[in-house]
Structure formats: C-alpha cells, structure tokens
Length: 247
Figure: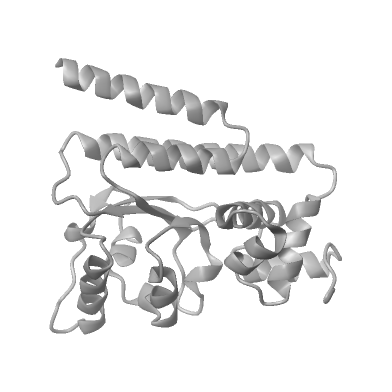
C-alpha cells in the first residue's frame, strides 16, 4: 500500500468513526458533505426515486444543489426523463453519470437535462443506489466541476454513502423507539406548515432553521409513520390527529 493510499484509508476510517458517533441526521449529512468534498463533489441529493405519479420534491431527504436547479428539475418534471434515476432502478452498483445510457435522438428530454446539468456546473456526477428508507430504491447522487474521478475514489465514495445511509436509518429508528409521542414537537410543527403548502425553504425561514433541518424532520416523521413520501406523511399525521387540518 502506498503512503497516499494509506492516508486516504485513514481519512476514510476517520469519517466512519464520525458517522458512528453522530446522534442526529443533520450531523450525518454534514459528515457526508465533508467526505465527498475531498473528491471534488460539492453538490449532493439524497432521495427515494419517484414513481410515475409522484413528485420528486416529496421524496428528497436532503439536498445541497446549485441555486435554481431543484426548482427547474421539479417544474420540468425531469425526474421521469433522467437517465441517472433510471439506471438507479436497475442496479445497486455505484456508477458515474456518464455511464447512464440514453438515446439522444429518441430521448431529447434526457439529453436536454444532462446539458442543463453541465450549464449549472455539474460537469461530473457519481451516483450510489441503495435500498430506500421506505421500502423502495433510493440514491445518493453527487456532482461537481472536476473533469476526472480517480478509480480509487469510487469504492470509497460508495462506502461513505452507504455507511451514512445506514446510520441515518439507525438514528431514525432509535428516535422512534425512545420517543413516547410518535412525533416530536418540531416534527409536528414542520408537518403542520407542510400541510399548509409551504416548501422546505419557506418553513426554514418561518422557523428560523436551516433548510436541511426541515428535511431531516420530514424524513424522521416519514419513518415514524411508515409513509412513502411527504404527502402521505401529512395525511397520516392528520388521520392520527397529530397535526390539525389548519392552524
């Protein structure tokens, strides 16, 4: 093992130790961001993959993306034309975005999406599929401006991503077992505003917390209520009278 590989492995073990000691989802996301940044990736999204009738914005657990990209991706319904998302459904092998096949002539929306991603500074992407938090396929997709990804980085990135996903599952499960009330006060508060049609960004501004904190509360509530997406979480919370139909 070369000195470079040795220190690379030591960094990886250090990240794993930090993930293991994390007590909440937000800390795990922060460590995951730090881990992928070492490989030149500064954008990330953690999400279940939508079915035909679903909106991707209801299934995103966490994201840090270029300004304007989430809105464009959602309003143009790109999730259902995305070759990366399609490949995630067919494999649990990590892959670079450029490996996701599509026919430029027969799938113009797919080509349009990938060109736009480059315009937003996402020149190189890497995706790690894994079993989802609510019984379906999920993925951690990361991107950046670098032009090349060393071969040694791929297994490390996959390891970090899956380890983080499993830790999130453990943390959420532990919260569910230790909290007497199904939802915490903050989770109920976030769902209440969600029920009124507020976006994660809107809620973050109202509650004066970070956007990713809002998404973390939604993820936790989804798991506790066994819901498949944000909308179903709100419905189940109302059915169980955990939140009111209106304020």
